Image (tube, rainbow, N blue to C red; front, side, top):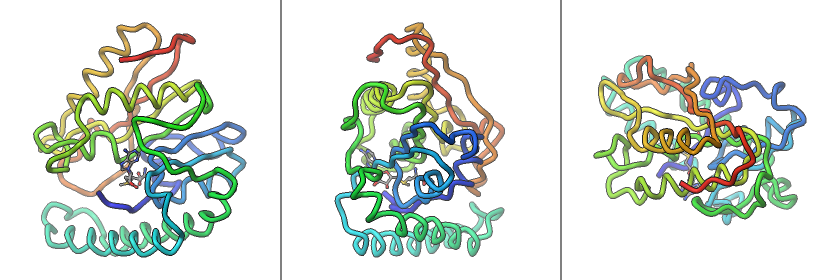
Length: 243
Ligand SMILES: C[S@@+](CC[C@H](N)C(=O)[O-])C[C@H]1O[C@@H](n2cnc3c(N)ncnc32)[C@H](O)[C@@H]1O
């Protein structure tokens, strides 16, 4: 799995939510990776926390790992240029480095004050409804098995893992969980089947309202289509839900 991240402007494109709209709220970003989202959000007055299992590592270790992953990913993407023909790989790499620098500038101070927390889904070290809203990008769906529509061969992220992880993300969330992406990597892309099953179960529970929010995030590959959207799961009662 790649340890590289995105900018707050990418989160805006994925989720359609501005930092201004989040100001004053307590927000969870899981997984946060080497994203500058938390750093930029805190600077904009958001009480943001990032979670990633790799936050057990030091600043120097994460910088080295991320620089390797950016270089490896750009090399792999340029070798499949036909698949990424609409993407400017130079500016793509620059935005990944900008996200890394924003993250690293905040990491040590943020880790000392609990803003960057080392943990792994499906278990989070937070009390019920600790966060107003939670954002989860590029782990769920993306790293599921190729058979299900993801990209990770021998993926440990089964449908059961997705159910447990979404249950856990909802447990710590007061108002809304946002998940991106929601489509498979098949061409044409379709809604990922794990999410379809989970949405059906959540809607049937009566405790959650689910909707797809059109996204303008462009990952650059030819499989992306009009189904490009985040999934928004909003709490409609105080019921505690287990899928
Ligand atoms: C591609 S990054 C996504 C980061 C960011 N949300 C984004 O959209 O750029 C995927 C991250 O998931 C983290 N990860 C891997 N397994 C995890 C787990 N079980 N729970 C939470 N995060 C995990 C990895 O360490 C990595 O930083």
